[in-house]
Length: 203
Image (cartoon, rainbow, N blue to C red; front, side, top):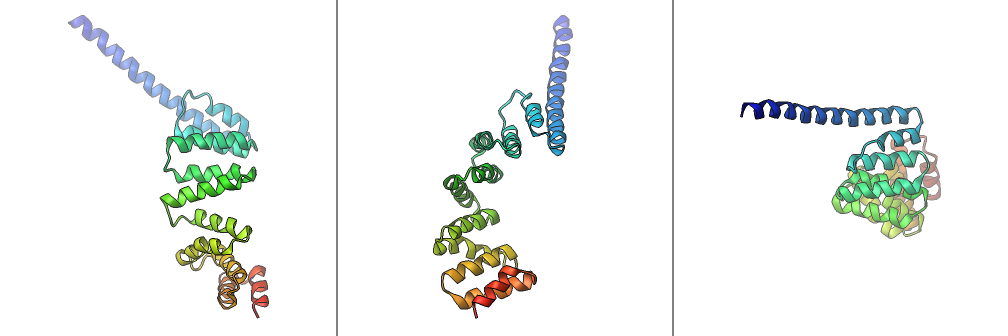
């Protein structure tokens, strides 16, 4: 029995030491990847993270971001998709996914991700703004208004939301409301050329 005790204690110490060493090694890889990213060495940062033999949410999210920075958008999409699969309710992973998707002009996939975000968080600023902007750019002003108006109600003194609402309302032929929104936009940003133009055409 005494012999077993002497064997058992070194084994426990060895396991704990290996776990601590492993954790420190992973943290060091992340630290080095941030350093390399800040230096603009994106592929080296990717290589550093790939030394970690794992398939975690954090690793996939970070690889998605680094591949996006490196201009390798397809690979970025793949890693963001893996992160979303691991954490389906992650808004940050979905917002990350739209970055390379937009670069590839995959507008349906971009819209799908914004819709998925709004299912989780109906008041999400970015999802409402860009979902509205997508509909605005395609001329679907009525659909765009659903998202843009919600945003203006949540952020009444936010320039980007108000100016977009102004133009969307103008193209919906509601001139008086558009004029009021352009005026509000000028209060927020007096130098706004877009708001100045809007006020001129609303006369």
